[in-house]
Image 1 (cartoon, helix red, strand yellow):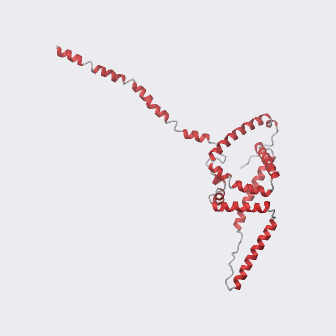
Image 2: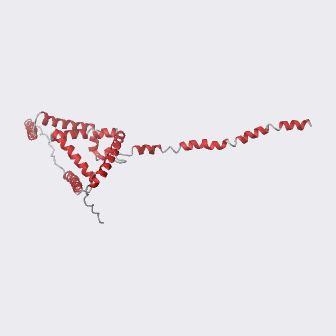
Amino acid sequence: MADPAEETVAAPPPTPAAPADGGSDAPPVQLPADAASPEKAAPPAPEPATETRSRGFRLLGEDTSVHKVLGGGKTADVLLWKDKKTSAIVIGGATLLWVLFEVLDYHLLTLISHVMIGLLAILFLWSKGMTFIKKSPPDIPLVQVPEDLVVNVAHALRNDINRMLHMLREIAMGHDLKKFLGVIVGLWVLSGVGSCCDFLTLIYIAVLMLHTVPILYDKYQDKVDHFAGRAHTEACKKYEVLDAKVLSRIPRGPAKPKKQN
């Protein structure tokens, strides 16, 4: 009988092990919750989408680079200082002309005449000197303006001028109030700038800005777009208030005629 009693005493140890197994059945319900927490952390993976949303406003539009807006090619390389030698020559030449005309009070006709006199005199004396010492005269290349270049430039100017005239016509007919206000403000600012400096100085400032603003924007594009987006939002709010209180009472022009296919 002692042997069965000992067996019954030895039997209880497995029973405490069984609750450990049974107790482990309840935690498994929490384990999926813990396992789900990393899965919940995985959905925030679309955080890049929030970043793209925060910088959704683009002055140049989505997927549009500064190089592409400037037309690409060599012109964009010069304005973005990728061709540093040519960019420096353009800035130096513009600065030299501005100093000649504005600081030294040179006149355009006088400058052209003096340059042509000096150039022709040097080439003439050079050719005569080579002939006098019985050497071959300098080979002066024949410079001609290619017809394709003139046609392409004229075609581009024609398209831009026609586009501007079409926009002015639409504004004058009252089709687009936003464009009307924008053009009025732009012309008012331009008149103020014109009263402060002459035409040549204005062109020189424009050349400097063309060689500085694009490269600075290309370097700090995210920051500029962020502040521009905030300014655009505030401007839209102000315009909505103005439109609701004042502009909505102004009679609009006739609607744009729909194009028929």
